Image (cartoon, rainbow, N blue to C red; front, side, top):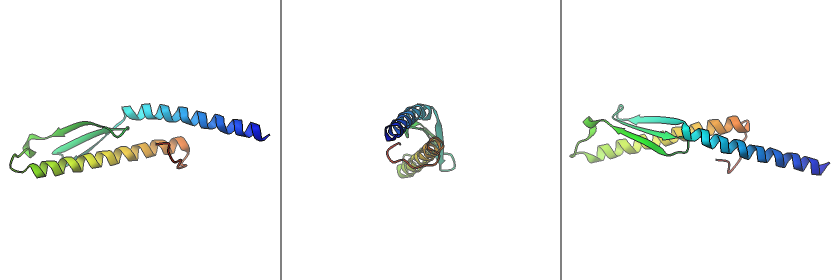
Length: 105
C-alpha cells in the first residue's frame, strides 16, 4: 500500500515538474512594463526576469544631468523586475494551488 502511495506521489511530482517547465516557457513570452519620470523612461521585462527593452524619451537626455537619467533607468528597471516577479508568483500560485514550494522558481 505504501509503495503505491509513494509511486503516486512520485508521479505527481513528475507532473508538477512538467507543468513548471511549460509555465517557464509561457512566462518567457509574457511581458510587463514600468516607467519612471512620468513616462520618460520605460523598461519592459519578460517572465524570466530579463529586460527586453528600454525606451528613453529624448527630452530626458541632458548631458549636464546624466545622474537624473541613471536614476530614472534604475527606478524603471527595478519596478519592471518587481512586476515580473509578481507575475511569476501569481502564475506559480495558480499552478501549485497557493502552496509555496521552495525551489520551484
